[in-house]
Image (cartoon, rainbow, N blue to C red; front, side, top):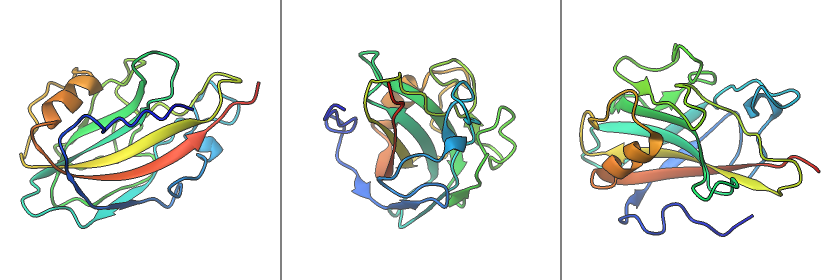
Length: 177
């Protein structure tokens, strides 16, 4: 596992709280949050609840990112944009291919397998422990203004100047050799 902090070079942002009934901060993903290509994996997005966002929050985005993937650029598992500021929870499974659990106006961007849905953990066998940064971003705009087919990296780039706060939960996964 690397010490790579995906937020180290981004502008400072206030901290607020994100919790999950699916996984606790620092714990391993349950089998359902692994990729369907892994035995027992079901690509089910985690339940998320958040509170304490900074004043002036007009929308949220949610991302799930693995900085430890052996790609040189990490791996984006999920990205959701334009979650209304009145929403403070996503149910487990909201990241299905239809986005049926997302609030009106919110949309999923294609992840690094180019599918607009949650893609579960699948660290390469023997590669060691991977961290999955589950982040709720509090934004100062109602719509972040990226197209639905944008990459999560473009979403992150666009959010950099609009982020008021970040709520971070880190889950882990490892596939034995």
